[in-house]
Image 1 (cartoon, rainbow, N blue to C red):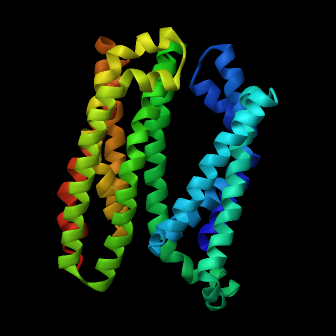
Image 2 (image 1 turned 180 degrees about the horizontal axis):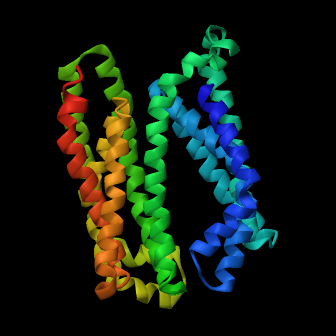
Length: 348
């Protein structure tokens, strides 16, 4: 309930500042008039999903925390299927174009939130009587919540600085290379969805075994998680190598974009193995409620990303963006591994 209070508060703030925020983003990321028009049309519709999106983060986190990944999966399946169906209906059948895609996503998020409320009532209705509104608003009860969520919030801001900064910087190389960068990042996130399943398991199980003081079970869980994440990384690498052209044609039908993407495909092949370690550590650190080191590591990673980009951009152009992105992943993995003894292994 504390999470929902914060989610709704932040979402209403986003809705209130949507116009100056959109203008700031356009100013920071100059592109063609057509791209700006479409982006703003999408944004001003999509922003109305903010309350549902942020509330869904709370529901997912809570369900995963109590190890009910079935409920989280049901929500995501409903949201994604509904999103696809409604976006196609609004954009194509009803001729609404880019606004229809945004509207389909907005509707899907609220449907997903409704499903989350139903699942919460179905699984945990008996727990409601133990939580009073006075407990939610009591001043002392927020200290620990803010201690963890505050550090994770700063971490999320740092991740936005990298992922959003990547798009902003790619935009200055023209619409074609911007499209290539966006498609490549979407394909890389496809891999992350598979690894996230193990990372979420890491969150729940790490929290469980640290809370129980069961170090042997904790160490066994971490070993298994890293084995599985490495396997997913290897399989994903082969999948990208074999299906690279097929994946590109799914993402775009523009021949010039497909052709322009060819020099950057090696990054698609290598990123799963480069990133699988850090994605897994993220789940383990969150499960251990080690928010402070995660925050510090992400701040360091932001510096690594921009320092490498700025140092190499003059000679390598947009390739320096990919080198910077890889550098931030390596920085995260190395720092998380180095700090694990203090914040993970020796907390029991």
